[in-house]
Image (cartoon, rainbow, N blue to C red; front, side, top):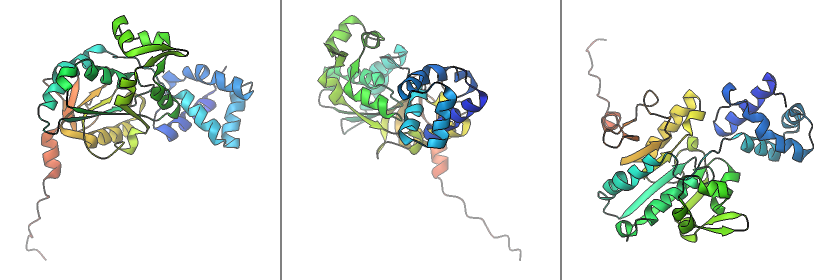
Length: 290
């Protein structure tokens, strides 16, 4: 399937308009793989036919299907394991020690098919003594209806369930079913999944103690990425922490967040910046000139 520059631009514009994500030239190789099944399902012979249907037909169902197919939903359990170990051993207990309410709120933004959110649920479930009596509220969001539905089902293939999980952990938290492996009811009850775009702001009122937004921002352009950082910062508790993907950083991207010197790989609100932003604007003294 040949992807012309014109077709590539149309698809890129469509994806960015609907999700904020960019389909850069370096990622356009995905178009053929992503859209082949749609061409077959719709009985279309070429990509140009599909583009014509999108532009002229304005079929909402087809547009949504194409946008969903173009999204990158790569994820797996305990991706880049070290940050999760840091959360479990240091960051979460330290933040919890300052919470008189015995409640933690966590937002997994751009959760894809749910492995990240279920990894968080396993962290708490695997340490019951430490978290006994606590309310752990995990909300996981993604812009894609399709992957959120999959995440809610908690069903994964043999390949998916083995990525990031040892055999003992897999057998403890998953059971074999007709379609593969299903997450235990305990895990599925621990996470609330929602369709939501981080560019629209927090998924619900209130602040979050931990926000995970991993390997999402790198698909956004400069302006959209800046807006996303603003949204994430507005949702983070004063002493909360943000976890990004291994190849992402706040440096040069936002003035509201800084690297955490204690917990490497986590980010926090720049308290000095927050105080400065909240300070009243000095009144100008009249010069006496007419």
